[in-house]
Image (cartoon, rainbow, N blue to C red; front, side, top):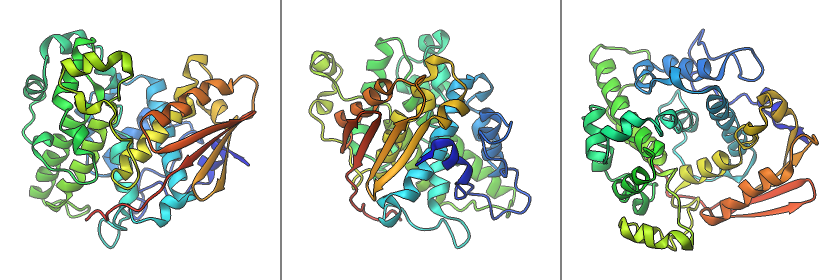
Length: 346
């Protein structure tokens, strides 16, 4: 059994831009002294998308959230490459003849999924943006994610973003998933147009990328929509969110990317144990990971400083909205994935 840290060191399929000579992404995070925030910024910069990440004011991103984001990034790659995920037709194999699709879509989704988290409690934004229409105007949105039909993201979730935004606003938060999804899609499209007009031939800027951008952004926009407990049914009905009551669980066949993100985002240990204020490297060195079979992963606690109950409660919560089974065996947690091939994304 390897620790997560050992997996991170060994993983070599994470760099989408590895085919570019002298690319700046040779440093693996948690193995070098590079900060998580620098890793995120460098990844976007390498892909000619520096303006996109700047739009999120990521310099205000707190360190624990950035560490979680990058740990999540590596853990998702590891899960994909060590389970039946890699053998199912969830995604087209390449963006073009040179670039693999999964590292492309995963870096866009993963490294952006919490990019608006630091704005959730921003009092000025809460006062200004009381609904999605106002938020779009405030963010200068010209390319509207919610005007699109997006494949392989649940329409039942994407179509209630406006109501869910209002629900979260009443609770004193600007939903970071919806915020990030809107902003990411608009800025990616704007950036692609500019790069194409300027004749940057070192990277791909064809129009069809907009569909991929929408897939990534819609996954982010829906990743923080919670299905209600019974005590919240009345409030959800009040906001027109009836269809989230007894909503079917998100599964790998209909929503492969949201399924993967939901699992990893929930169980990622750096975030799970952040309140202990331990170094990410220590946490990763003391969480063991084994793949029992092609659809089952097992996490083990290797240090008494880490209470398994913390991680188990988070993992068990997956059963409320994702098609998985979670069980506990002493100091180990088993997560069984129900993996079905999705319709190929084209």
